[in-house]
Image 1 (cartoon, rainbow, N blue to C red):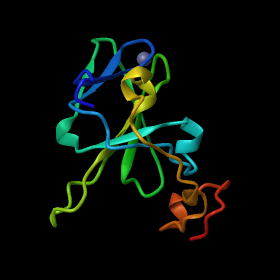
Image 2: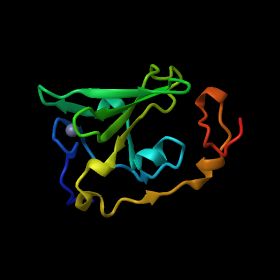
Image 3: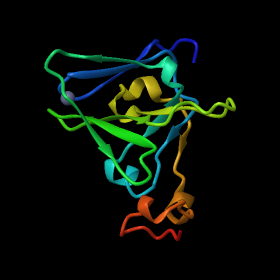
Length: 142
Ligand SMILES: [Zn+2]
C-alpha cells in the first residue's frame, strides 16, 4: 500500500526492543510447526540486511536455539514477547534464499490490515529432516 507508513516498527510490550523494517511483508505466515504455534507467532520474512534492531540500554534479548540449530528465536527477557527468528547459518553461496522472520504480532495491526495471511496446516504433518528437529507432540514423521 503506497499510503502505508514506513518504515514498519515492531516493538515488544515493554518497549525495550524495537525491530524496524523498510516495507510491509509480502505475506504473514501463521506457521503451525511445533514451536511457532506455541508462540502464536505471525511471521513476515525479510532479508537480514533489511532489518534494523534497536534496543534500550536495559534491554536483554533472550534466545531459544533448538533442533538442527539453523536459527534462533529471540524474545524480550522483561516482557516475554517473541520478536524475531534469525538465521544462525551464513548466507548460501549459491545466491539462494536467506531470510529472517519478524513476528508481526508486535506491529500495529492497522498497519498490516491489507497484508495476506497464510495458515499453513500442512506443516503439522510435513516430514522433518531429522529426529533432533522434532517435538514429542509432532504428528510429522521423519
Ligand atoms: Zn519487552
